[in-house]
Image 1 (tube, rainbow, N blue to C red):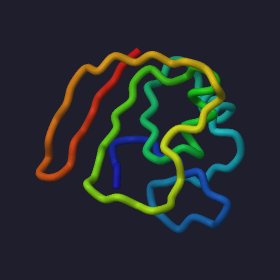
Image 2 (cartoon, rainbow, N blue to C red):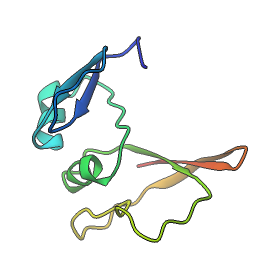
Image 3 (spheres, rainbow, N blue to C red):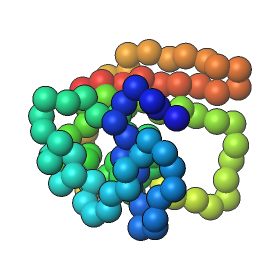
Length: 104
């Protein structure tokens, strides 16, 4: 899917997806282990994002919004009760989707 990058997938199952390495455990500890010299793109939801927000490890947010209302689901943000301020940098429209880009 992303052949030019090193790819990891957080999962509790065996992973049969060429180009991806399965990892488990605390996402923040895993990212710290990669070192500070890297830019890391997280694709996923709150289970991976919340521990990174809790440890102030997020410099940019790109949020894509689809016009579907769900009656139930996983919350987008559930990090610990701390204020994190991000500045809106860009808004783009792709057909019926909106993309919001924020930075610290």
